[in-house]
Figure 1 (cartoon, one colour):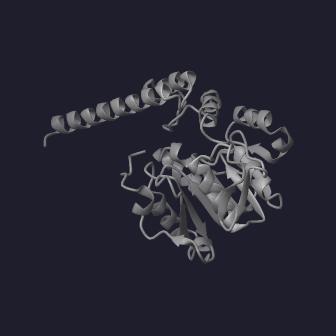
Figure 2 (cartoon, rainbow, N blue to C red):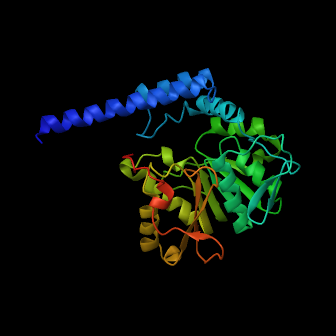
Figure 3 (spheres, rainbow, N blue to C red):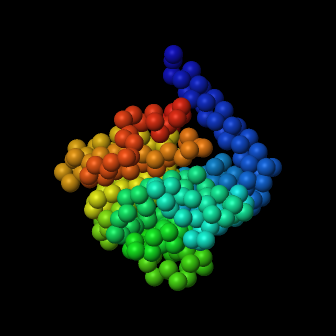
Length: 291
């Protein structure tokens, strides 16, 4: 295949993917899975070149407006902020006591199950956004010390609006910077954060290095597994970081959604958890995309 044909084939593939993405976006709006404002913001982020994007999925200075709409959309079908009257963690499962309450989002379900199964003394959420995950973990197990970081003051403003009593535990920090100052904790977790960070200029790699440097014993990731080869990156860290050289990799999969899984890296073996032997176990038939 000559150079012209290769470039033409690549362009056709990008156009095809853009059309599929647009179709899914329109369908989500018509099915009321996202708000109209989120639809417009999504169109802008996906199809109109943004400034200061650092090759990530979003212009992070403008992302907080989109994030607020995203919260509204998810709240249409799922419980975002839980109470112990509605949910309880029992035998590594989240039990819903109030059947009139909306189910948790599958990603949130596996995240809380993973964190509470590991029962750490302290946790830090990278990309804590509005603080719902930290508030929910605190509700389910108040003995865990919670901390959060996000890259922008605008995001933390949303945290303060949603959880004013917890706001003091959050601070601004960018994990894609090599000299990132984050407090050491027993467990670090992310939820739909690393999937948006580009591999260009080593940004994704730096973020992963910072996460594993900050975690004493556990790392829990809940991401779109097709956006990066997370397992290969973990293997790199195991090779380069002696503290994690003998770590074990596990996963918890949602029982109804095969795309929602929590990846767990632990310095010690954890009986009863399923080991991750192949990245295909997380991909569930998807392919890894260039990022």
